[in-house]
Each structure stands twice: as C-alpha cells, then as structure tokens.
Image (tube, rainbow, N blue to C red):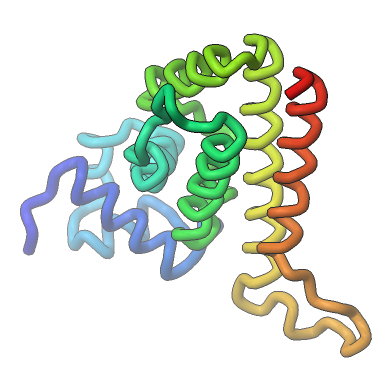
Length: 189
C-alpha cells in the first residue's frame, strides 16, 4: 500500500470522483478505496467540505499552472485562451464544473491579480476587467455544467430523435466571442 498523505488522499478522491461522480463521493467510499478506517481521513481533512475544496483546488492545477500573460500579448487573444484553458481543465474531471462551482480560488489569488493587472495595463478599466473575468468564469462553469450534465452516464440517450444535439464547443466559442466583443465595444477597442 502507498504511504498515505494529504496528496494521496486528494488523488484517490479525484480518482473516485472520476469513477462514480460527485454525488457518490463519500468519506466512507474514499476510506474503503484507501484501505483505511474512515476516521483516519479526519487527520487530513476535518470535514467533507474541506476535502471537496482541496479536490477542486487540485483539479484546477492544469489551468492554475498555465502561462501568465506577458506585456506583448494581445489582451483579446489572451482572454480567449485563458477562458478556453479554464474550460478544458473543468472538462478533465467528471463533474468538474460541479466540483469547482462555489469554490474559492485561495491558492490562485496572486495569479488572478496578475491577470487583472495585465488587462488593466492593456487599457481595460479595473471594474470592467473584474466583471469580464467574473462573467467569463461563470459562463464557462455554466457551459461545462450543461455539457457534463448532458453527456454524463444515462443522459442524452433518451432524447427524441427530432431534438438536435448541441455542439458544445461551438456554443462555448459563440458565447466567449460575445463576451469579448462586448468588452471590446465597452472600452472602445
């Protein structure tokens, strides 16, 4: 058996999430998966909420470690790429959007500030930069939530034949373009 530590518990919890989905993740199931007694998990996480927050934080690592913008970057291209990176990361995990929704990016605050500074240095007023980042984040979480709900186990297969399927990638790109175009128009860029 692998020596248990906080990172192992989180990794196994994320593996459990991918296997059974967020609704079925429990400390009892996780303890069984780790071959330990359930109370031993409290050494690492006081509550299930603490465990879920750590899982959300770890699941966001691909996005949280993506390159930060440079002064030479075009703000529109960077904003679009950043939002796409966020979407890809949410889609990497079963129920990734649900896991992330409502979480607080405490480990990412410096990176968020640097992204905001980049937008402001590119001519986007601070309030508009804040609202654009928030709008893009919520739009992305909502889009992925809908996509994962539709494509999850047992979903979508019982739709009538005359109901068209949604091209989630195209719908996401169209919404992202509306956000970008709205921001560009607002700041006169």
